[in-house]
Length: 345
Ligand code: AMP
Ligand code: MG
Image (tube, rainbow, N blue to C red; front, side, top):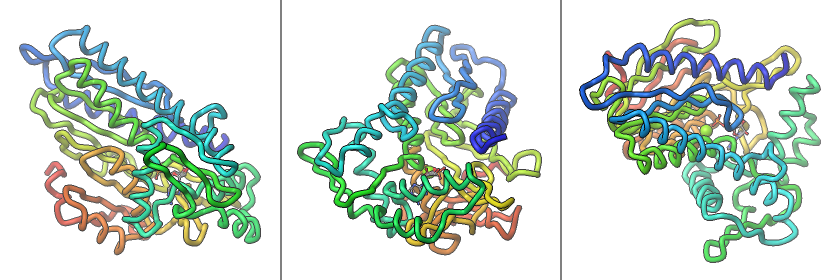
């Protein structure tokens, strides 16, 4: 099995687990509302599940379809795997000169730079050249060499990304840069998909793209509380805990979800931009935040920052919480001060 297949299977496992949980906990239909489930579609390189709650089938179907359409649209804009995506055009042309981009892509690039500043560079979408070396390492079964890492690093650094707010253009300050939105685009897509569900008339909904989740309004139990199981790291069955969410988002980053294997050793797919090394201190980081984009970016950032700095960062942000599993304590949680409010007792 290659790395992509492993990643996919792991993602399927997570999604099925979350989907089953949402279903199992669903009570019989209420008098006016009903819930519908559209699941298991492959989008943004992983599996997406969407649940809608509305008073009629038409609205349920329409809101699920609108949400999936938005996810596909965002992926077509922001995937670095797709040669014709807007992001790929930026990666190809932005050193030669400024590239005009859509409002959506600009918004994500701007938010990314803000997150880089807030995290002292732990979150950095310019990490693309280093990610590429690690991806190749997974294929070749050989760790990237010091020299090539040093060369790739020359193209890394959010301060080398020049954003022109007025003209909505992007430019690279140095040669060899490559943007990678893998740590934020799924979250952004989830938020946009939720907006579409609201526009389509859903009274409630949940969008889950590979563990980046946002929910709003009425739940399948018609009590406005969405119950989401936090999957255990590999080798352990069952959930570690169940979260109760209302109009909020979560995202999980972790080395058990996506990783590369080189010389029989597992390396996280998350890179510390400062060292170009794979981030290995934390097995899993789940962040709860208002928007899925925030949760997504922050979960990646905390994975890089480690336990102490990461917890400090999340404590400093209003309405954000984190639940961390350190790599050396496989089943022990470290939580921010307000996290317990979201955990089902
Ligand atoms: P996530 O699963 O949200 O933590 O995103 C991880 C993905 O984001 C990786 O597969 C890379 O494509 C990219 N990435 C890796 N390290 C970083 C980083 N330090 N900052 C931003 N993106 C990263
Ligand atoms: Mg992320």
